[in-house]
Image (cartoon, rainbow, N blue to C red; front, side, top):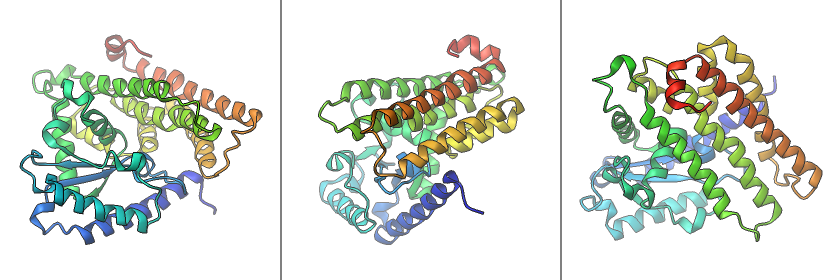
Length: 321
């Protein structure tokens, strides 16, 4: 039986993930003292297990020390590290890192966990943390990844012990919504008339599909009572599509909506596999964004509305859907 596009891209992505992990373990043995406090995770299409031929490596790097104390953050060690990483990128024939590797930089854990700080708007820790929570897979030092994940979630659960029975992770939900609004604002700000028609329309389509599902699949999971940090960690380790299945498994009324969402997402993944997306033709462009509007309707106005109705107490406090 032929595999569907969701299953085949997932399997291909898992194979790529395994190869990258192997390459990193070989070049940066964890037995070496200077590497043991580094966490590297993949986001983007690899983090969602949706790699296509044109996907690049979207990576983030966290030091579990303060960078002033970590030998890996010293210039020479850092340059050696990223040089070897670039060799892996070339050997596996990935596209060049975005913006010539501008984001290949260590973030120290104190900045990463400084949730709500004014600094996180300009030191890239907000984006790094939200992608970590929404669409990441560890590719180096899984033990450090798990430690960082538990520490991060615990920051959002500061008030849990005193309000166990009525606790909702509003702080986390608000950060996810803030990230979504940031994505939409950045899209508007960075629109470039010089972009060719494919690049311009593809940016818009990715926002309306992958980015939207990444954010709101997590919010759908968080829209429940008696939530625990362990449950949140479990959801974070899932892909957006796995989260949809989790939500549907707890509410039979959502199964039809989730199947419709996945069917539309399959259309998007199939389109990603082709180099020529047909955006030169007005008719195909219009068809693509009719699909995107339908996807938006399914996720926000059907799935989230239904999920929120099942929890009127949180719906009152959020007043969103």
